[in-house]
Image 1 (cartoon, rainbow, N blue to C red):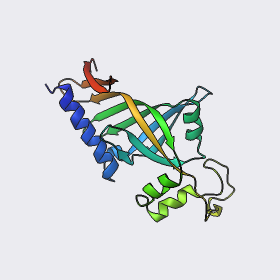
Image 2: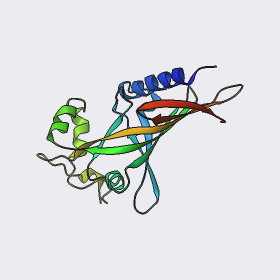
Image 3: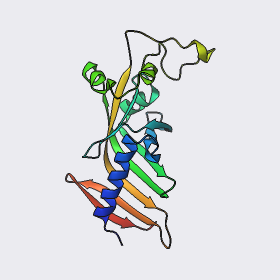
Image 4: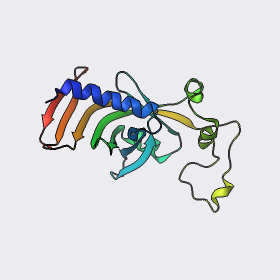
Length: 183
């Protein structure tokens, strides 16, 4: 049987692949937030970066509802699934909103020109439209920001035979500790 430290290393490698390989299943994941209304909200976002410390980053429009929810409650849940490996990762972490000119300049090279437009709409995401072809884009203004999630718990579930494998990794005193769980 694999040791938890080897499982953690493999999991970290798969997450990093998700941020660098466009076809990797971890590229797109589900972000869950809970705001003051205490209703869970989920949406799919794109994994953009995984640091060596396992901070997970994605981009969004600063005016989006997820920003409001994160400001109200910065504890978030992330769900990744790899269908070929039959591997699910549930991540719990603290989200941090990063915005500003320096951030825009740092990340602008990573975003294709066509995609940069998504952060320059005149109206906020989720605003009703009469005709989707009439979206107005701003020339001198954008609402780009980065969300950085620092995990404190990760559950690894591998569906395999003869028994499934489930491991909970918890951050304790700046170290990841793993323990096997009943699947």
